[in-house]
Image (cartoon, rainbow, N blue to C red):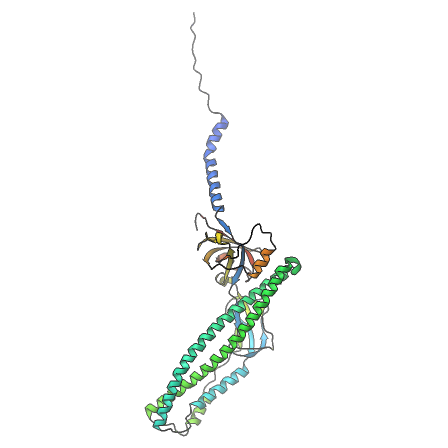
Length: 397
């Protein structure tokens, strides 16, 4: 009689699909981690309410009043450092400079031999006048420097207002951008132009006063030195001294006056402010030069306005993504935060045409953003509007 045989069946293995899911489990975990990191970084992005490209525009001017003979560049033309931009007629200025040298030589001549007492009295009077002129000159130079900075600021503001108005004109004018925005831009340009003209007139008057005091101080110091020499040596000039001084001044080589105006650095001519035949004053801007090439990164920055709540998360050196309305995409970093202030007129007009879900704050925090190296070679200009996104959460800087 046969006995039953018990056979042990093998344990069923995992299905092929289950093994595949098990192998993909690390990949699913990695994908989830990356999604969490991406969400964490995206939640730390802060967008600006309005942003505008700002920068330094060089105002090329003359050191003496003269008539413009030739204008060698056009608006939009790229120029190199040291290139001749304007040629001035310097003949009249050179003639006046030569006359001034002859008059100075004549003033150095002593008309007659004074006595010792008269020389001492003149020396004391000249020393007192020199001390008084030094004090007045310091005040005049301080006032001139303050007026010069104010004039440069007003000129830069006027340029930005003109560029903003031109930008609206290029977009189609009042019919394309809206009546309120276009009217606000025109009013801002008119106010900036009036402020610029007033600042130029104030600077010109202050500069004339300082120049007159500078000449008077030089004359007083020269007279003081002459009387010191006479008192110390106790001798007088020869009767032929005047003629000798005039012959020496006439024989001295006259300093050459260069009538060429050169480009202070590489850039693009933003605007011509003069025409051939026009007479320009000392310090009057003739050309506006926009830095280009390697200088663009140093002379341009973005002024972005954030709400006070959004600005609390901003810190220096945080990376930024900048998108201009012209289509340029740049990188940058937060430089500093300024005091809260209302939005500029152009920004208020732009935001007035947009549908706001809530009431906009009365004050915004301006933040200066430095541009990255990718700004070199780009066609940038002050007044270009755009947007800025600050990445407050990054894995690395």
